[in-house]
Image 1 (cartoon, rainbow, N blue to C red):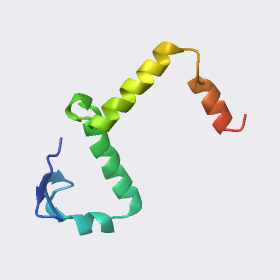
Image 2 (image 1 turned 180 degrees about the vertical axis):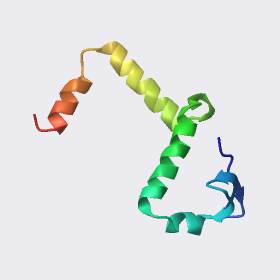
Image 3 (image 1 turned 90 degrees about the vertical axis):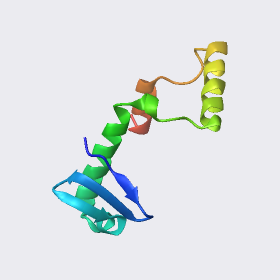
Image 4 (image 1 turned 30 degrees about the vertical axis):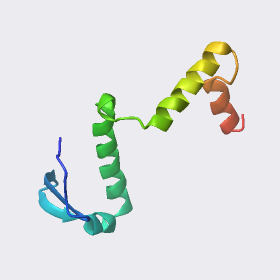
Length: 91
């Protein structure tokens, strides 16, 4: 897995970004859209592999608690994922 290090405000250092050892944020933003999407997906996948390392804010924790309490009060409220998908597709 690549290890990115913030160097100043706009410079990133990595030993494994396609052989590039030093790249600025501006250079990343100049990459073709498809390549930026691919890079963003790779970064997101690396984050998703260790979700416990992503701290939640107090507001997020409170919202999760609120939703859990609402579900526990009335587990039949709301819509299923299948219903929502069909609805969004106009089915």
